[in-house]
Length: 82
Image (cartoon, rainbow, N blue to C red; front, side, top):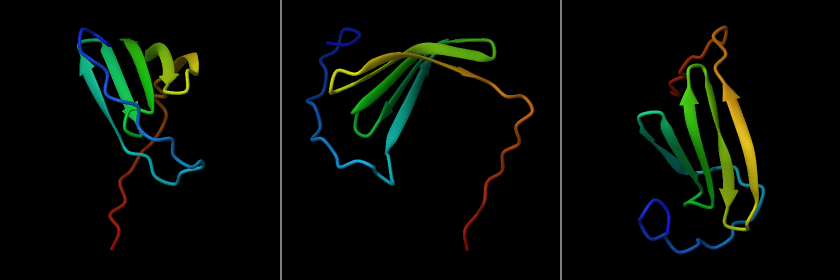
């Protein structure tokens, strides 16, 4: 059970490396949940200003702390393929 709800069954293990990964993210206030490859991996975090800190877990039992920081000098662009 996770956050009071039952966990979905574990998806079949995929061949690695993968060129494509599906996923989604959810935010509730400062809490963030990122699910990748049909919940094969989950990244939970707490947002604090320009930083996110949390824990990564996957269905194989791997677990690690992680941190991401905003780079205010970064430039991004969207390319529309023709």
